[in-house]
Amino acid sequence: VSGGAQGEINELIQQAKDSFSMPYYDVYSRNKVRISKVIIAISGKFTQNAVKKIIEGVTEYPLKNNLIFLDKEKIEGLMSKYNGI
Image: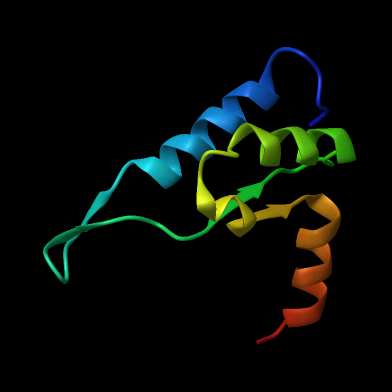
C-alpha cells in the first residue's frame, strides 16, 4: 500500500475512522462499547508514506496511536516466532 492520492489508502483511512468512531454491541456485557486498537493487516508491504498518511488521516481520534500495522514481512516474522505454540 502506497500513500498515493487515490485508491486503497483512502479506504483504509475511512475504515480506521469508522472503527474508532462507531460503537459495537458487546454480547456479554450487553453494552455499547468502542474499540481501543485497530490492526491494519495486508499481504503486501506498507510504504512509510502510506503509514504516515493513515496516521494523519485519523488525527481527530485520540486513539490514533493505537493503530497497528502488519504487513507480509511482520506477519511472517510473527508466524516464525510463534510457530508450534
